[in-house]
Image (cartoon, rainbow, N blue to C red; front, side, top):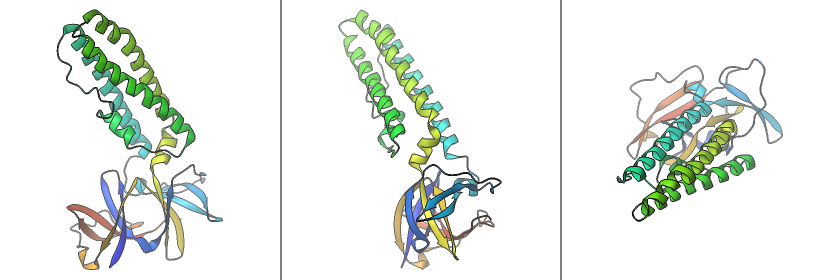
Length: 254
């Protein structure tokens, strides 16, 4: 039997032997290294020693996690702008509002519900965003109910109250975006990796699972295009219908 740690980077899934992983810790602020290789994000103190941190995203040529979050929040802002416009149209014309008034069911709400931060500043900004976002949806639902009996009051609500809450929600989201670097660190994990007397950290997006498999479960890959000077793959594993690249070795650039 072989125990593998399964992790995700973007939409990709990878696994590596748990024997090479000393610890899994939260990512955090790093100290930059002048003239470091492009795959190296910096260095950090770990158990009375200083180790380098390699970005797995850079290793497989994906955009930074921070850039990906930035693009996501642009989409979430546009979605809420459309939500408010649709609400105003429904209230003013008397038509049916078809978007959700449940703050947990929109894309931003779902993202918030799955987000955990260990940074005090991020938690403070998030708390403000959560409250304004919740009020936006709840007041939208109230306006839809009130329009059935008091059309003028419903119109006032969407034009004044809800518009004001929307502006505060977007302001809180903008503040959150300004902290994207810290937010990204709050989400990503570090694998403390040791192999061939080399010890360093590998920054990944999410730890998915620990898989207990037989070595015979690892299938030969049809393509080894992702293998490189610093990443050697062992094959592919089909885990509950999901194909996972199994890593043989990771090497850190000097």
